[in-house]
Picture 1: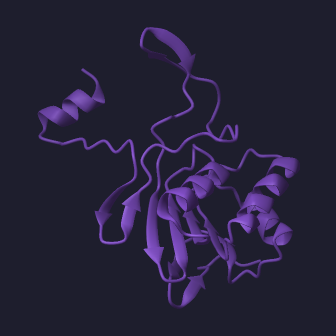
Picture 2: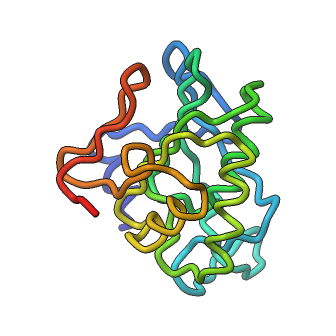
Length: 179
């Protein structure tokens, strides 16, 4: 028995959002994020079967949460397998805002090389990201490179750690890790 079947037997309900959908006032799920750019933000090659065909599992079900605020959009990502640039682009297009004020969460950048991080940084700047709190799978080096590439202060670009949080009115509080 698969995990999903076990959870269904226990009474769990699975709700699928292929398209953006408002889940609370001004809080949206992105739905499935199109892959405009080949960011390959997943770990290793895996296969899956779709309609009888074996294809690479690029985690197509990846999605994020977007909060609409007067300062701009706040993107909250679990692991960013669709790629942060793809998710930023889709969020701006889907939610009719010209900028993403803050990007918070995991963005799966820990294995990216300098050229890829520079490319990512450039696009983050294009989408107006003022605050970046990169957690678990983002990678410490990636966060520091993004900070340097975009001339951001630690108070605006930090590694997610114990005690770190973001308040859309007050800004970011980086937590216990310092540099």
